[in-house]
Length: 219
Image 1: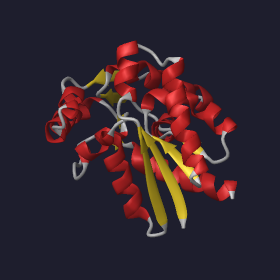
Image 2 (image 1 turned 90 degrees about the horizontal axis):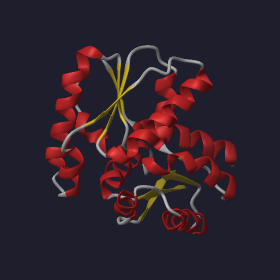
Image 3 (image 1 turned 45 degrees about the vertical axis):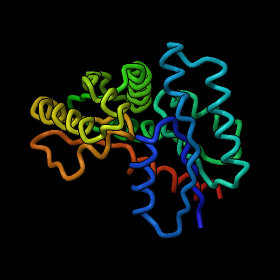
């Protein structure tokens, strides 16, 4: 029985990631660690402060102490620090968006990355470009914030948030070869949707694949 910890700052990421993991294997135990104020704090501060970093690291260390075999850190804004966290702690730690963006960067074609939260745009762009550099592929990418989706999710109206995301995907479909939904919380918006042209990338499947590979190597 493998024990996977999900470390998150919003339930909007917890629910789709938990659902996906539980559908993959009966021998997985998923344990959630959530600091629901942390994303709001980063937004108010305008950056990740020492206090914010401390709160995140506390959740990660607690997950290790509780016996996690691996940790999926679902918060996009902390993605650049995952490698540092992994070097300090005893189990594999991955960010779903990193696993996905690495995969996307290896594929040819015009790319659009969609976000709902303005604060994730620069982090996501820089992470994507780092993978393009690593994989020696084109660095051309358009970053697009879906208007109103973050606010709808903040009100708990995920139906409206998903509607806005899907509308934007349909609007861009003919103009891009790859459409990337940057945050886990966006993934359910395209469930059951078949695009006309673009390949649509979401992060839960990438996270699961990479996590299982890391755990097996780590063991």
